[in-house]
Image (cartoon, rainbow, N blue to C red; front, side, top):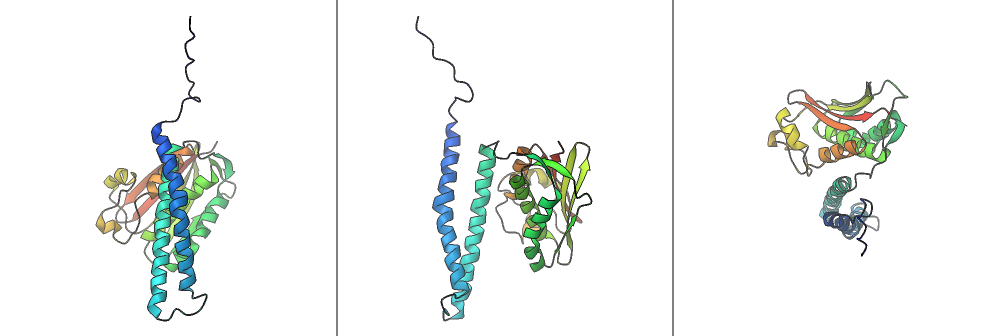
Length: 247
């Protein structure tokens, strides 16, 4: 009697065709789009600073700056799309371990300090426990904090503060980023958690972006075994919270 072929174990099963498509997309974007964009940004920087001599008419310097800034926005969008695709298609992309939280939060605050100063906004990391630890992946946590702090700076009125706190809550640690100022209607929060969703025009009119930040934070938080939530008061501000396990 002929032997029946052995059933494929889960590890031996080929990945779905959709996964191949996502990986091909990531490879294409990573090389074919990001590489020339980096060249555009780099040469635009050279022109903007007139490193090899004056360009002549002042409009040329202005246009070179526009090219540079537009390239940076496009590169940021591509990077966000790549992160979203990676987090959706590779659930084990992040590898959380127990680490001390405050150094990573302070690093994120420093990365955004120049942008905050330019907008007349203060970043206040109100961390009371220097030894507070949680289970997270450093790159994943940095990704979450970069999106949340950047978003908070955008919506904080000049002269006001972005507040960052990290507090234990039973078996979890809650890292919260609060900004005063404009905030969406609470009923819109579930919709805004989805990719490419934007807030209402009266809340979002001064904000540029593709609406990927909260989706990325949600996926990264869940990949680290945690969760993401948002509390919004249109009159007083918004608090975005990443909840991580303590062990």
